[in-house]
Image 1 (cartoon, one colour):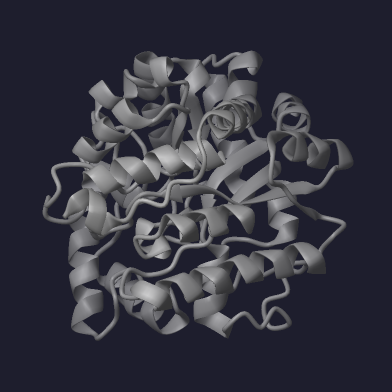
Image 2: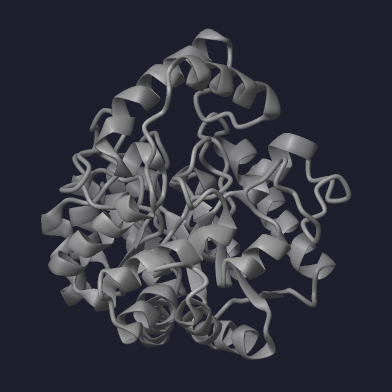
Length: 395
């Protein structure tokens, strides 16, 4: 089916995409140190970014979780202050483009933004290092508008194991479980992308509210530690959470896994971090790609993951988390945030119903945030803020 099929546009107009993860704030930090005049996203930024407002509109995006990620090389107070800077730039963007963006703190805000024809802008902190082992800092981030926190990024925290680090805690420590409980009490979604499978399982056992995977796909389809094992997907119906399939080729296409490893090694050999997407690093990447053609993921690759995830977890527990501006490479047809109609067309070809697609794009994500709000109201009535410390709980 072509993206020009009227059903695609009609569906996205009624049920726009809630995307679980976009790293535009970090790209703005890395490229122009938050100089928004130099990256005016009201205009075409395709030479520099995966994201701008015209392409968000073209892609049918109705709500975006902006990642307020900071690199794990930043620790302690430096991680906290950098996270505050990331939150600040999201708020700057919302203030700068009020006709297109609306800050969203609740599910009702998301629905109101849709009714107004604006893009609901939510925030997610990517990596528990952002709170520096402090539950008070966690609460402060919530008060500033952060509505999910990914428990780890690529490295362990002292209280949770990452998918891409050597296991240390065996999942969550006692303090890690207290972090989850305090997130539940606040109403902050527990994000299990990036964490180890044991951390996923511990968090699901601990959480009293639905969890999310803001940008993870199926490990059964592509055996990468960043993806979700079937036994964990099968627990989502009882928990009420959602898994938001990501588009990152090295996580979704088996042939891309080895290629990406070699490309990352090449980048490091030239003095760059393997996650660097600055123009200089990308020039090195493009030269490597010219000599070693990259295996291409497509919209069909993502649809394969979603088909499997629907079979295991059910349609009520799926979403989309593209990871735009947080990855060097994207699938063919899904090059940037304008690409979501290609995925919808592919799923329509696979006989996904319009009701199923409405759940995938909009309804499931809004429902999960609303459910977390409901749990928070109950828990706040039962218990006050936790002042536990990592020293007290983990020794």
